Length: 306
Picture 1 (tube, one colour):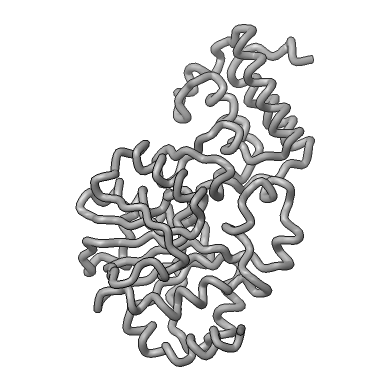
Picture 2: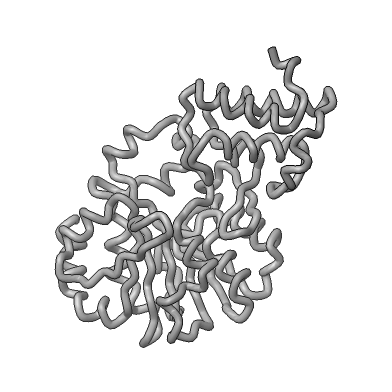
């Protein structure tokens, strides 16, 4: 059957059809079979991800056919995220190395970065920023790449993730402005203060983690699971962030579907829930003064978990 396939478009269509028929789960950089198939086919052919449609009818030679079909079969048979098969993905307009040492880069925070954090930082100068729970380093590196005058720290507890982050720092040529630090949240950042702290910590509940599709099982559990309500790390960040923010500093944290649990737990905290092009996606912003004003409630909520 595959002998009838000839062009780039043929193989993209074939891959998308096979992925959809196999019932694969999409959510790692792409949310549909067609985009995943496009990424996979163009990678196998060593072609740019933004290839002009004019080349869509170009025909594959025998070796190229084999390479493409092999990756398609691996995606189906292994149910591994496509970024792990190709070793790369895109985030905030930049290409990153991606493998099982860290989660596949994906976060609505990319939209904030590309939009200059407007309007949230329009009147707030930033010179130092922190990407907490950095994983592959994508958020912090993208902040540095889009803001050449920022100094950015990347922090994570995982040595494996930090090794990948260092590779991405070199890959994006931002080593002169980006530090990679091993730290259990803020534990290894004593004395460090920032104008902006951005974090995409683990926020998957225990029940959600148990029900995750196979694709997510290839990712490190350390980057996903966060207790019965998904707030184990978010509450620690809320309790400690003020000590690491400048007076007019801002904290931005992604908590995804755990948004409702957080609001119920801390109903008086004035979370600013950020709207994205596709709607609200569980990302909040707080000023340092809000963290200080509600420190007692945050500390009490955290203590009640022990």
